[in-house]
Length: 498
Ligand code: URP
Ligand code: ZN
Ligand code: ZN
Image 1: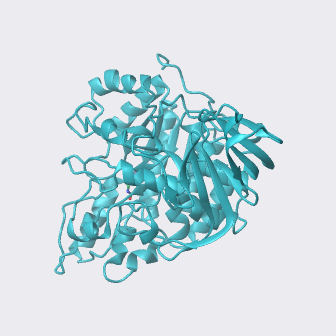
Image 2: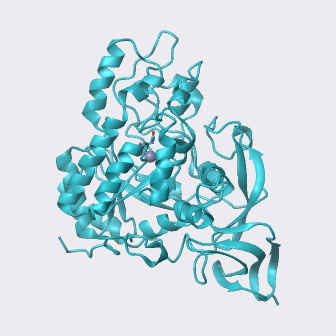
Image 3: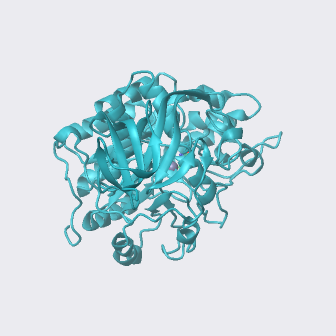
């Protein structure tokens, strides 16, 4: 009779704090023991030469999102979660929509049913576009009670953005309930003003998307979001920081003791505004917001990562196939302004759906760019890809960690394996990858989700519907190496407090 379900022997165990060689045993879906000379497993896995990492957590991805017009994004919960597992990500947090003029219950009422087909574990951020008294007083508290403990607001995009007044209402509600507020920071009116001038001048190419949204529109909105959050004393998670000048403002706010955290996304570390200039409309593949920046910005983002100003790297996976971007202007809510077709039938830049697929490549690209190049060490890699997200989003102790009692979400990683990324070998439903032809060093060879081997040597073994909804606890500040960052609350405020 074996002692354990699985024993992984002789790998280099990597946690948020240390790296050591040991065996790891799994029983009943959780980690049962880490040590030497552990008993026998029903399945014995030799991990010599491999790293043993916590399963990745992607806390910002758009999966099967339903638009205000009822249209559904191409990336389904099945294809998106297969992509996640193939890339070493075992949990993700995506977005439940609210559309203006509707309650939360009326907006995509079947979204949670759709999500139940996921192969990976999942949770939601609730998008708020219309914070009516009923939404604030009844619906958001009901969500919080069910473990949906983060709200998402947009300061731009036509049908989604909040006014400052509505943003303040959301911040105050979150503070009362101990919820985290996540925010897309760009100045809507500044973008609209720039767009109008560009379109009037006939500047309609994909690259003009970046001209319409220069760093200053992101910096202004980030400063405003942080100022309003400071007024309410509500912690804030800034999404997808794209450039150094925004990171510098966040560092200043943190230094003042403000409760603000930040993420960037893999594509801002590897791509630049020049990608938007690719010929034959291929630049449309790289239309995302905030826009890709000058290549020199990646070095500034790495500085912010090393300084801890940016401490999570998400994918912002938001797939629209190239074919869709070409043929179906306005296919998503993630655009701005009336759709205009150009003489060749392609849409002007403002009607190209914003976003790029990345959930499958997030870990391998970050490992290649970060660890294989020596920019970051292995514990930092774990903090950026899982541990910090687990703490920040109320999954601490359960996900993003390798310790007895935690869910057995484990990735066996070959740090030397070199592979070229190509869309034909990927699981996602989108018809391209921004990393086509990218030579990666470091690749997942096995993914284990709650004790089940769900990917082995690139072959997916999990069934649709085997992922679980993750009811989350309060946000927490991560305190690496026992240091509590100056001025941070370590737990959310209890309900009823103002
Ligand atoms: O371009 C992007 N980022 N698309 C997804 C929506 C968002 O803003 O996160
Ligand atoms: Zn966004
Ligand atoms: Zn996003």
